[in-house]
Amino acid sequence: MIQKITGIHHVTALASDAQKNLDFYAGILGLRMVKKTINFDAPDVYHLYYGNENGDPGTIMTFFPFPGIRPGRKGTGQLSVTSFSIPMDSLDYWIERLKTFKISTTTPTQRFDDELVVYFQDFDGLGLELVANQKDKRNGFSYGQIPVAHAIKGFYGVTLMQDSHQRTAAMLNQLLDHQPIAEKGNRFRFSPSGKPGDLVDILQVPGGERGLGGGGTVHHLAFATANDDTQLEVRDRLTDNGVDVTQVLDRQYFHSIYFREPGGVLFEVATNPPGFAIDEPLEHLGEAIKLPPWQESNRINIEAGLVDITLNADKFRD
Image 1 (cartoon, rainbow, N blue to C red):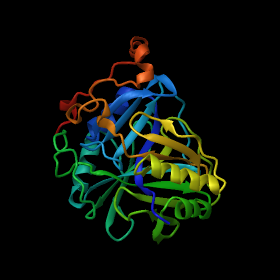
Image 2: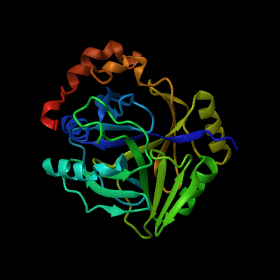
Image 3: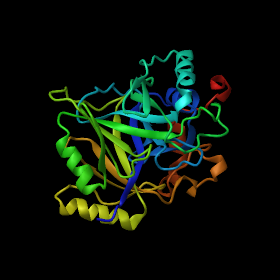
Image 4: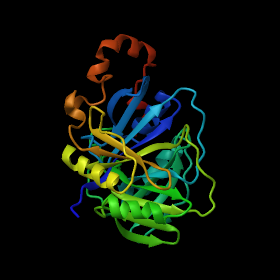
């Protein structure tokens, strides 16, 4: 079977306050604001994209910040932790930086042989990790407020919490081009490439409480595929195996299909092109509110309904 899924494209989560979200991800974590647009299904709500310098797949964390959203509940059937990759010698820097902003972290732990992990949460309680490792050769944001030697490189991977891992593992392996690459205790790791940024862990928690969507939970996990043709091949593969999949949807910066894996997590397959530079130059990504063409006639009303958000980078600079 020819590989059509190449790794993780993006992770999308639910938040409560757009300014606090911007401050946390672009300010404290130092990710680049890659795109400031709207939720295409709820145009009165922002869709904020953060990533690396070029906005590459495998680095993109996105949020729907719904003002007043009720908090979610962590549990099974969810993507429970999103992990970011940092250099091996940067862990002390990040622990001290997070402490400066009154963000608690766990004690570093060794998960597999070549990675040290600390867990923390954002302002909405979203589960996050920093994973210090030597395998990631990607570059971080070179002109942000974080020294480039310590800058986040993108995702390391994600963790899916499930009551049982077998059915989710079967879909990853048989339909989504992932191979089992590691196992330790109740943690099972899969990847189409084996590289940082493309790692999917299933954490088996038998009898665990079921998660509920809301603020501080992940909405969906998107996998990357090369183009429209490979996406349609993945869609055919899924439908041929009885999976209920949406039609292809135009998300402006990529095309998407959605479906649920057997444990309940919403999956997406997103195309790599056309990318985030389609409507603004690379050097100015994320500076203006960008709308899809079908909403341009409503720009005045849409912008009037969105709270203004601005990053004070000096507040977060070392």
